[in-house]
Image 1 (spheres, chains in turn red, blue):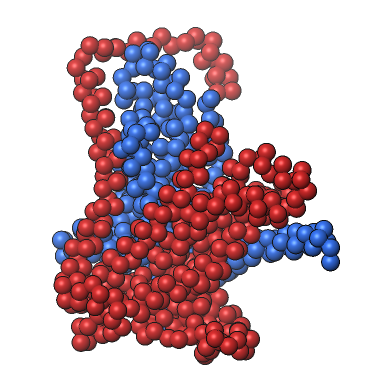
Image 2: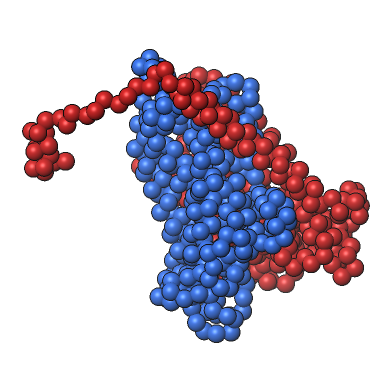
Length: 336
Length: 281
């Protein structure tokens, strides 16, 4: 609109527009309002009802398996045999818990380090690009983590595994966890890749809540002679404790339910192994791996039953996460 | 070592460790992007866009059916997810406010926001694939839409919440009905933020694979029908990466590269749009 046309347009004066009819008393105004409101209510209802519908539908689909194997019997049985049609969840539950435990024990400290680095230590010019880079980790699709994990990371990790066996394998007590052939894939690889994947989720929430800490608290501590580390550990962390635990729970929920990346690198063995270097399986990985091959109704139903166990666990974990993260916001009230 | 020296040493050590932690995070990001770039570009081939996925054992290239299938799935999921997400977010911000019901919906939505995508796949399987008796593109689109909705709901709710009440009051004082106030005033004022939410939702579902394994599955041939299985990029990456054929693995990398590029561009566009959001005070 900066060329001569614009001048022409302006010089021609405003085009007289026909005034729009104001339908003030027409009944359509009322009904349009009514319809818009109802559409919004319906959409909100749909959005919320999906959660319950998901649980109900998955329960319904796993019913044949629930009836055949029961609850306790299914949870503690290690037998997973499509030929004899006997199914038990135990190896997959343990595999899910172990891979997530590895992910948390590596991912939480690193996430905390990243959050403190960005909020307390880094000079202003480095904050934004670093925070952006860490957030991009969350944008990478999990299938790409899987592809990279299997074809790039696993071969490199296979070179490191003999070193792990030599050093960590010699520690009494936990040593046997690190014995095994250096294949590059297995429970430990899955845990490490999960740890990378949860970094952006945990660290970005930690970072956000660390910024909520009133600067008066921070400055008072510095004025009393605290070091940066002491401020982070004794002032910032206690102030944001509930939200930090919430962030960890949120990351845990992600790790428990992560499917593709784990399926690629865990090795997909339905037999529980005593070593972290050996292949294993998690609930999502066995679902992704065997679902399309499940030919009988009971087989498919048992797989969905595994999904039901997973959703029960993740929903609990995530409810805690949301409640804990919200608590900080509420106690802050308007000042947040 | 004195107390001061010890505290100072702890401080320096912790700063170094925090720096290393951050470096580790950035290192893995660069490593993943670098390998995707390297293998992806070397796997680039014009046939990828013009030919369909080749049968096993041949040395041909082709992903046309998967690209088209993925675009169809995304279109279906957008056409379901955007209206529902937008309206639900609008209800929260414009009708529900801070009420008990609205907060309950927000709580459930926050849980859905990080629900494992594989469970959503099982849900779409249960309500669509089971009753219909076969895998279908429509079921895949529904699964992706369910993953999109919580993101759109949340950003819409938050962005509309940023609009000051004076604008609404002014519009109402002029005699506008509520639906006109919402569509012509508040949506318009918050459009950059709402658009960001939709872009983020699109980026999130673009690479989703797990739910598609239970719904859209895959198809070796070109198809656009919504009621039958459809080829799509994520499932092709999954199947080709685990195959023994070198050209299939190359195609998996090429597809992963294009997916990552698409998602990163979407994320960057979303961020720059969000940067332009002006908060009316």
